[in-house]
Image 1 (cartoon, rainbow, N blue to C red):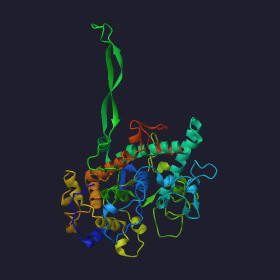
Image 2 (cartoon, rainbow, N blue to C red; image 1 turned 180 degrees about the horizontal axis):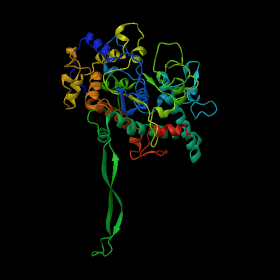
Image 3 (cartoon, rainbow, N blue to C red; image 1 turned 135 degrees about the vertical axis):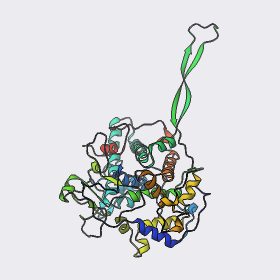
Image 4 (tube, rainbow, N blue to C red; image 1 turned 90 degrees about the horizontal axis):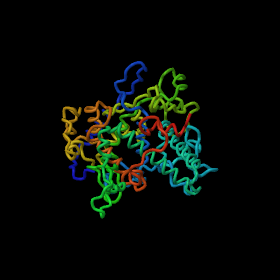
Length: 468
């Protein structure tokens, strides 16, 4: 995205030290009745995992390694850079029939609130969507959403049986894209930023003809009438592509990794589990072999653990307040360290250290360099919190910088100027560059499925997927 921004070498030891400092201590949860300073009241916890779901939908690099330098131009993402739900649909019922229902292959295979499985292995298009029990149940929501839309398409009639799958997929994808652009991104990047990026342009069309009621000249039959109409023409100032959209390294290796900061160390799941645990939340991760002690993934959903989504999203008119995500800042919860401690070295036990080393290996520009490329005033050194790491004060890793500016400028409630613009423009650009998206095919389209508020949002999608 910022190919001309300078890249400076920074000491590896400083990155490892910063990564170690970014992981919070493992502390007990605060009681419900006490305010949590880490909580972000602006973004319910479910959007953390919707953001993770989007990430898995558009990016997948199975050959990445921190042990070698990367050429960003050679970095292949073995996933279409589109919001097309290929993690849900795979390569279709002909090539991956195990993803689809045996008796009705237009529908996706279901297994209640959990994912369909053989043993511990989930039958889905992307194993990452089984990393934890929250993302796995969110993936299952999209399975049920598709099947509900199939029923609607069939009930309407007029669609040939061979076209039902394609029509259902189109509607599912467009409503999903709408949710991302009009529900998720405004919360993360700010509504004003999204209004600017999803720019509404005007143009004039002829709408009819007005005859002259008393023509002075019999040869003058009248004049045409016209009106102004609107069309969305995304205005991308920094994200540009020639033939096809791509995933910028500033996005994949830095800005979009803000979601790691939103992860809580524990969650409420439903009323029953909450009562069974005496009001305590279920830890995201733990070393305990007890399957009822954590939300570890790649295993069947424990009985009674089906998520009540009112704890993660707030529907219009719903009185129950969902649990918040964590603030977007430079502090990650302790479980994220455990989730990535696979090689036994202290340097790699921290997800933060992995993110910082990956950004360095890919040659991601510093936060200051990107800010200047955007004509944004960089954060002063006094607000970076890097006094003990002076080598990073002038050339701050972009990922850390994005988290820090969110915390310093926006109280951790949303992304700041650099991070917000990178995320908004990249995702909007991916949708705008998809020839089958609603922005390209029918830019004036609005959701056709029912919604409770002013527009179709994630709680509405869930309501269609699992009606009461």
